Image 1 (cartoon, rainbow, N blue to C red):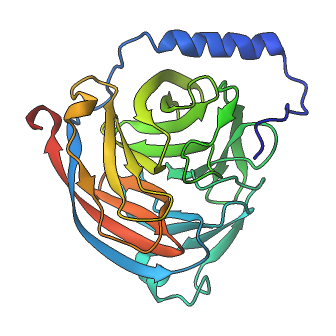
Image 2 (cartoon, rainbow, N blue to C red; image 1 turned 60 degrees about the vertical axis):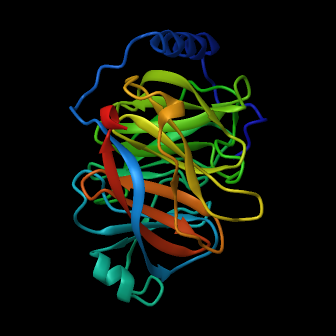
Length: 296
């Protein structure tokens, strides 16, 4: 995905500018929580390496609506075929994708920032135009698409340069993590409407992009994972709570067990309190321990 080129589409520039203006105005509003969740990550309780499938970049997850059911694998940083496994057991016992059902998507994805939520796959299309696609997991049909009002994007994470928009799911629903040329030193966060794909509210966070490799959202709080250019031990070093229940500088510093590489994606399961991570082709589960934000 190249953000330097202009989209080869007929888009009303006044409409796009209006969308950007409205989105910026929403940053001034106080976020209205959809749930009573007040959890924040305290530590990594354990790690389980399930298997090795694919290359250094990829993403695997469940449908985060309930945390039960099949496993969905996006192998690589660009493709148009999603692999669906009926269960975690089938996923772990399969030789490669032998037990998977391939699902042809209406467009190729870009990066590793996808989400599976409420029976749909959400991903950024691999094209000059920044377009979010919502695809039915039943038949691969395009359910909706939207051009996001986020101009002049740069890679969200300095250590994961293929991902411009990282979609995340938590107890509050769907989010988008990104960075723009205007505020490229720090990450930004958008609350999304999973039904309409509209941007509901935007925040510029104090969390730097430098040395960031992945991020996830827990109870409305962005957790950013950092590493080094020579892969070392990943750690959550910046937490930004949109509800202002926890100052960023008071969040606990959480380390992940040492691995050989670096994470290309991390997807939080709110029902299981697990992270589905992809590290140099290995599919890993991290068990998280939580604390109440007000007690941290």
